[in-house]
Each structure stands twice: as structure tokens, then as C-alpha cells.
Image (cartoon, rainbow, N blue to C red; front, side):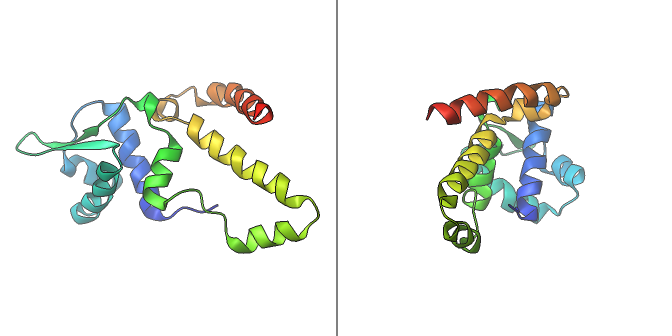
Length: 147
């Protein structure tokens, strides 16, 4: 799975807004992620259209999260920026050619998507992410097995 550079910048913007928990000016964001003002506006427009951030106009304007970080997942950002978790058709064809391989492949895709849904901004911004990662692996495994 590979994401474009714009998605990486979107994650940087979202994490910066999560950590700072205030309205952040576009100038501050462009300096932080080292992109042009124009590129930042394009990325922010997608995030705003997707319902993740809000834009405040005026002298004290900028960007802020629209929802609490615990309610914004990595999956949400990827869907907005990439259109979803895309699996190349050639990979699906190759796996389908192997007997019973397709069912296990679908399980793998479901596992990836579930993990990305569990990975919220508050967890990504938390320095103790490794503890969360270990406990979430067990929770995700239980959720997939029970479905």
C-alpha cells in the first residue's frame, strides 16, 4: 500500500492541529510542513470538504479541527485524501488465482482497514503509542474473528 505525498502532508497538518488544539494560521502550518501557501490551501480544502477541519477567516484566522481527535481516524484521512485503501487489481488477480487465497486476502484488507479505523489522532499524537499498539492488536483480532 502506498499513499501520495499530499496524504503525508495532510497527516502532518492534522497532527499539528491535534497537538496545538487551537486555531493555527496558514503561515504557521506552511512553515511547519514546509510547503507553499497554495499547496497548503489545496490540502486544507480537501480536509475541510471531508468534515475534518474548519477554516476561520480574518486577522486571527486559520485552521482548527472540526471534531475531537478521538473521533478522527487515520482511515478517515486516507479516505478523504486517497479515496480509500486501494488494492491494485493485479494483486487481487494474483491472489485469486491461488486456491482459497482470495478469502484470506479479503481478511487481510479488512484487518488493515480496521487497524486504520482504530488509529485515531489522539492515539497518533500520544507519545505512548507503542502501548496502545500492543493492546489494539488484540482488540482488532477479536473484532475480525467475531465478524
